[in-house]
Image 1 (cartoon, rainbow, N blue to C red):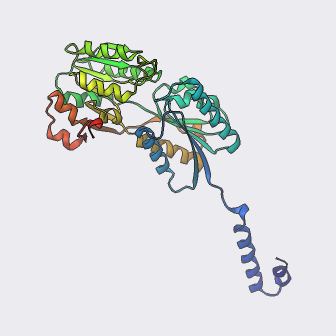
Image 2: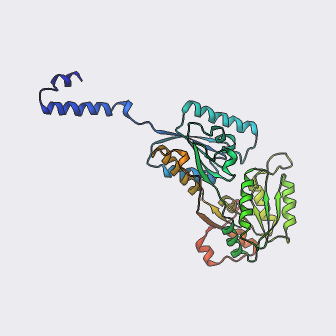
Length: 347
């Protein structure tokens, strides 16, 4: 730099050369290189769960042009409800927050809000959520300065319409849930939508604790209901005092029930449930990622970004289940729906 200064007054060319070199040194120095954005992602479930994978893929797609470093914590609460292990993972997440200092936290599904996000309401770190079933006010998110996100609203009416096209004259349904508090919000929304469906009667809102009670309940529905909504099938305690694997629950159901069943998620249809107009995990994540972009790139305060819900529903039909139930699937349904051809355990 001293060499440049020595000759900087000699000529206009020298001054231009000096200025250009000085700017090059400034902008090529390490201090001038922007660091990657740091995002901590806390998922309620696990990365092998397609619902979580789709949300994260959508989130990343909305931020694809940004340089981002991610750290991921998997609470794995679909497969493990041990409070001690869950709290250990939450403590790990909080250590990452305090030491790594992420620019934003992305939390999806309800347990991540219950165990982590609600502890950071009105903190100085932005949080964006997706896949939330319960009312965000239950976590203190409404009116908070740092939290926004995407609510998961089930396509109940659309699913019933699809079900009626597969199995006409659905009038009496039963709805099955387990002990997960997530279903509180789902059932509330279903009750609201039932007001517009006077032809539908829910004859049983079944809160089930054990796997043996579930089997007994499903068998009791044979011949007494037209359809069964399989919502909560994860927290049924078996004879070994452990949660029965939900894949086993759904496999048993398809082997022992002749009543058409439905849900709101692709993963259920893949495991034998007849149909769903599924919530798009990708859309949930993409909308959350767009909110993160507004916060991190456009510098929009989180409280100025309204909490929203996704709109896209994906019609899905399990043809193996339809054949077993003796249902004829019309060509227009085949052409307009995602078709699952087999039970997953037969592949």
